[in-house]
Image 1 (cartoon, helix red, strand yellow):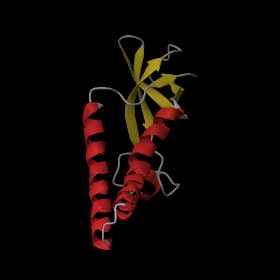
Image 2 (cartoon, helix red, strand yellow):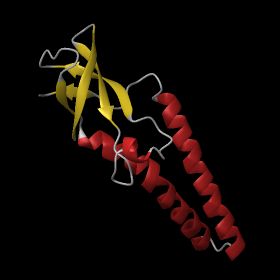
Image 3 (tube, helix red, strand yellow):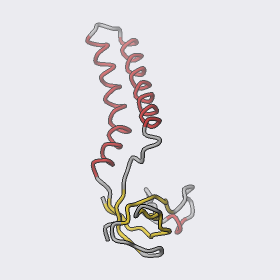
Length: 133
């Protein structure tokens, strides 16, 4: 996955801080309608592989597998656990109400798993970016 960014400052160990323009869900730019409540750019750290200088426009890349893994954890896992909870309770002969209760308990469990995984990864940078051009 690649994105355009601007180098804002150089950091030690061949790293650089870059500012990436935030894409909007509506397809426009946040500056055009000013209805977005989020800031228009995100700052992150990237490995400066090409010795870029502050103010330069660059292209940064990250592993797509990291992005897809995070998306699966956030979007797919809760749905899978919800359905598995219901199916497991149904196969064990539980009543309809108990099946629904178990499926919601599995959904809550997925939320707990998400929170714990985020706390575990808090000190690690989940995504690494490289300046490639």
